Image (cartoon, rainbow over all chains, first blue to last red; front, side, top):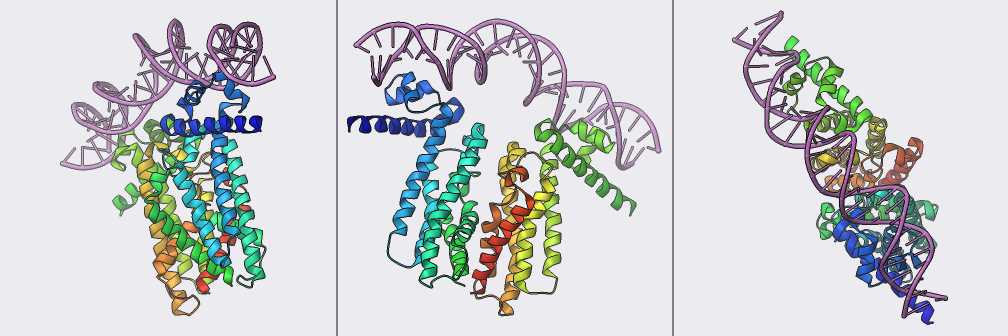
Length: 199
Length: 199
DNA sequence: CTGATGACCAAAAGCGTCTTTTGGTCATTA
DNA sequence: TAATGACCAAAAGACGCTTTTGGTCATCAG
């Protein structure tokens, strides 16, 4: 119990520190010593939780997505029309990310440009995971005759691709513009897509 | 006649040279002297056609989009269903760009990262221009009762946003993957969007 | 007279060498 | 046994000098 609680808490503290320092210094200037100081541990102790500096930064982004997925899954379990849930989920995938990285001055691609290949790989994985969650709701909508026929996962992937341009990867959250406007934009895209699902 | 032919041809020659040298050296290492040598003119003559090195690179991207728009407008003038034309246009906006920059080793954002603010601004302008062309076809589809009601331009903007993630800005054409696969992906997005327009 | 040119120049970028910092490791200590 | 910070090779930064570059314009040729 104590072992299970303690390492997880230090791990999260390190990720919290990385969140703060990535925003403040960017990836390059964020040092392991800075992280250790921020957490209040020795520098070598960082390596009890993460294998490298790279892994810390990538894990911080992973964590954002994990939290997003938890939220998405909450929506899937709710009552209400599948269409409404899909719309909410599409909006959430964009807005949640924007809110999670709004304190970073660059898009994630630029922030972690030194880790580009690994970042792109994880990104692909995230998108696929999100699509799987969306597919569950699409399938349910089909069973309820709310949506027309088609492979739920393939359709879910279309939904993900269609909203990807609004994610804060290439453009920073700042460059993407006012969050309300972004939300309205996702909403418009989602509405048209859902109308397509209904056919 | 001769005056009208000559300056335009040198301007294009400069842009051709910039296309080649951007691919070979990237923006930073491409020099004005290199460009002049490639065209076979004096270095100062470059400034008879372009105000700066920046303007040359941005004009080369402008030129790609101008060519794309010409192609888009050709499709609007064709006979056939509006749905088919919209689908073709959405595919074209992605594939044409990919083909135009496939010899660049980076996405356009990274290639011209030193010109980011201006590039983003022009990008916005391109998207709006493309949306206006698409809106014409949507409006016609509505008049033909092929599509349901709604503001054609707002719907067109949704179509543009929904396909933007597949453009070679953030990811290079190489990173976007096999062109056939990209085309299939745009097509899938387009199909669902058009089903939405039909409602 | 007009337009093309390349010499010129200040600023930017590159280079080489030395110095400092850093990510990762591990011997030491509590 | 787990946390720590000294250590080290490599990377990055700093500095001063050299070279290159974007833009300008005096000059020249047609």
